[in-house]
Image 1 (cartoon, rainbow, N blue to C red):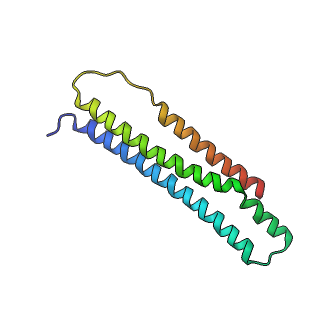
Image 2: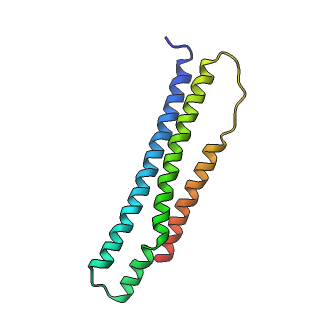
Image 3: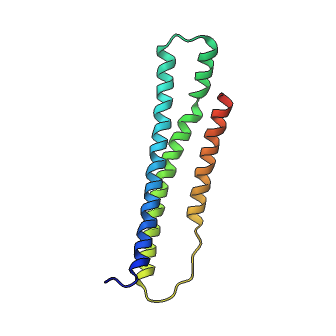
Length: 129
C-alpha cells in the first residue's frame, strides 16, 4: 500500500478539479467567440430594422472578441498552474520532512481574473439589454 495514500488521492482529486475548471473556462471562451461570429453573420445576412440591427451591433462589439480570448488564456493558465501545483505537492508528499504551508497566490490571482472577466461580460450584456 502507498504510504499516505489519502493525501496523494486528495492531491489528485484537487488536480482533476482544477483541470475540469480550466477546460470549462476554455470551452466557455470558445462559446463566446463563436457567438460573436454568429452575431456578425446574422448582421450580414438578415435584413433587420435599424433598432434591432443597432442592438445586435452593440452585442457583437470588439470587447466580446477579447473577452472570449481572455477566457481561453485564463483557462490555459489554470491548467498550467494546476499541473505545477500537482507536481510540487506530490514531491512534498513524498518527502518525509515537515514543510511549512505555502500561499495560494497563483490560484487566488487566476480566480480573481476569471471573476473580473465574468463581471465584465455581465456588464456588457446588461448595457446591451
